[in-house]
Amino acid sequence: MIEVKEDLFVESLQELEGGLPGRGQRWVRDLRRSAFERFADLGLPTTRHEDWKYTNVAPIGRIQFQPACQVEAEDAPGSLRRLPLVDLGLPQLVYINGRYSLEHSTAHSLPSGVKFRSLRDLLETGDETLSGHLARYAGYGKHAFTALNTAFLDDGVFLHVERGAVVEQPVLIVFLTAAGETPVASQPRVLVLAERESHVAVIEVHASVGEGERFTNAVTEVAVEEGAIVEHYKVQVEAPRAYHVATVQFHQARSSTALSHNVCFGGALARNDINSVLDGEGAECTLNGLYLGRGSQLIDNHTELDHARPHCASREYYKGVLDGNSTGVFNGKIIVRQDAQKTDAIQSNKNLLLSAGAVINTKPQLEIWADDVRCTHGATVGQLDQDSIFYLQSRGIDRAAARELLTYAFAADVLGRMKVAPVREWLEKELFERLS
Image (cartoon, rainbow, N blue to C red; front, side, top):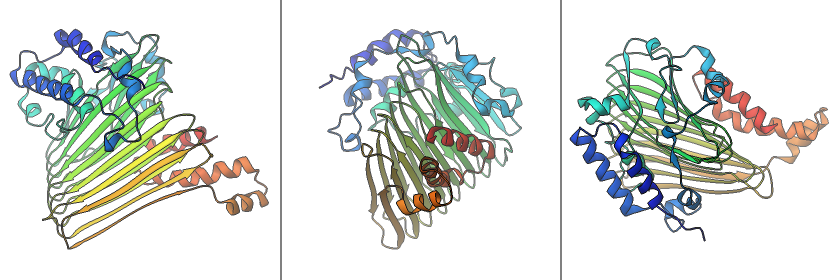
């Protein structure tokens, strides 16, 4: 059994502590200290924890990662240019090895109504708006990796969308991690504040360069105020030796709308926690997800939709395609609080296994404390339909191509729900190439 050594993270934090921003701000110091103490109490989760039953993070705990910000990323600019979305002229915020890159970013092109500040700068100045929202939604009391990210608060994104602003162009955020012989770890943080009646789309991409081991521990908090609409894309296409753990937490006010598109293709181990608290009447939330596993990849998606107020609606559609000896995990929970009458919630998880060695563990859950609700959930696991393959072969398509077409059609359904065309087109191409 592999020994998990939380002390490695403690040593890393102590080495980095002198260079962390905001040491002169009491609330920043208190936040880091509280998160650090909580991580020390919790330790890294093990397979004895119900939420981590099928996901063994022991490899993360035994590797001595160096903070990515201390490693020079020589090949990063070239890799950045190869990301298709970078060439589309979207306003982009680029972070290389955990630090904001002014050279590769175009924050000046952000449209009116949306303001960006680097988290590192704001921690130094002790911004009041930041202190009122940072770490208020993604709680670290029960989540060790969120506590770890909060303890390492260094740099990240703060997007502030002003009241009534309709941001026409999506905002692209790229976190690029470079790793060579030395394993590196980055702890990216994103905070999006969408004020009343605003509308914005945010694309968060996690990519990498180099073949070395790396650990990305990301936390994104999205506050959606009354009547606001936020569409969030999270795309993970990291290298085969990457470990990726991420939390995306929405908090929704009255009549707000949140849309999440979570696409996970890369990494040796990937864990995504995508959650929303519908904390105002009439709030609506949609969670879409697609995960593609091959080789020995492990991809784990946990979602939680917390209906805390009445007259709210949620929709969740997650699909997985697993090949080789890959493993998929889906755990989706819908909670309906006692006062959340008239809740309307639908959850679906469908999985396609392309090989005998592929495995999926799926667990949709409903926790309902109200009596006037409409809630459904379901999960399916299957293989390609042989009759459909035969039909395509009878039309002159060889068996391999027929399998690819049917698999692509199964997965592309999720991508078709995406409203931002450049993201959808890029992912459709990426999906086809990986299936081929």
